[in-house]
Length: 230
Image (cartoon, rainbow, N blue to C red; front, side):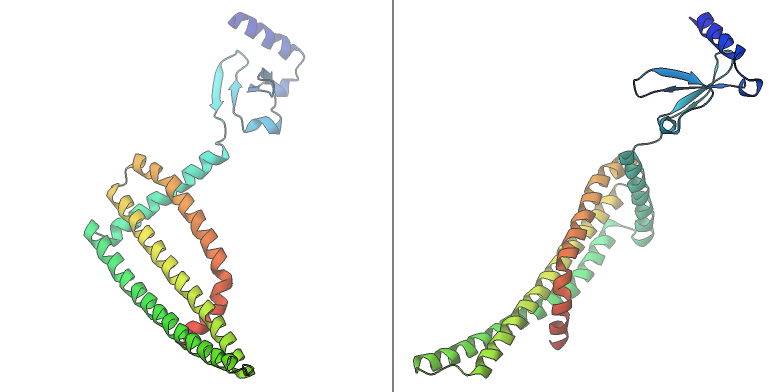
């Protein structure tokens, strides 16, 4: 079959200008057929091709370009390797990671307790005004406007305070998850197989965090003023 290939090349060269007789390109078209020519349509370059000499010898093989998902995996793996290098500089042992997590959670738990106390305080105020409003109604009197306004403001304050509490609790979950991932990555000792297994979990976790954060944005602006008042 090689003599036939060489013969076809020779016949092609007869009608080919001398400037184009250096080498050939062999690629696969959309129909799965191998095509030989002096150029490659741009849409086929990413699929890979071969550079062929006039005698039919393969001079070079250009591999197909990585698919989008492969590029994403390579990027994620590179990021994990960088994170691992940072971890081994920051922590000497697994115990160091646990200690760092505990220090972080102490501050978050204190913040959660403070906001929970605010919830209890605001609820007590709501209950008190609600009882006073009920007394007016039982006496057959209209509830004063200032009482109703105060109750409405307290309900808004309660909504904002609970939003802050939800953010603090989400922050705690995020910290626990982050340290768990760092611990697992640290224990992998930089093993490529383990790092690769981490990619899917890392990517899905980051996407979930983005969704959670975006859904909480509207609460942050309203709640921040309440936080400063407590």
